[in-house]
Length: 196
Image (cartoon, rainbow, N blue to C red; front, side, top):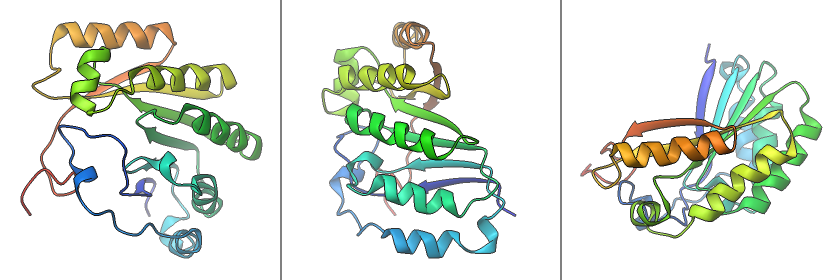
């Protein structure tokens, strides 16, 4: 039985990351809410306890609340929902959180925001200037409820792999009483940065 699952709900992305070229490809058509209901209505998914929603950028979907609700409704044993975002849609993220917390008192919620350095470095790595919006997303999440966990997630590349960058990110994490994690950038087909 599956107990931990990551679901990419869209290939669309408004970042232009150096380590991920999804934005350069043609995004496949996103699965509709009914498709998620059918897929996650299968018995294999009833035991899922930990669910991560990711993309592309999930909050680019106009129906993201409905999509997540369709998935979560089928997972009777869900304990924790993680939503990964680049932080470019702080108000939409906040609206989602408010609605989710109202409907799901028994599910822990964590929002992971990708920030890859100080403003200048983040802009180089991410290809867009989303640093302030990313921090704003974390700030809004923390203000909504103590039930919302937040984390700064950093992908280390040759551009930002330094003690200075990690100290800066840790300082922001501490400022918002947020978690902090990092991983090494990887080449693979999912991120469209490696030949198939």
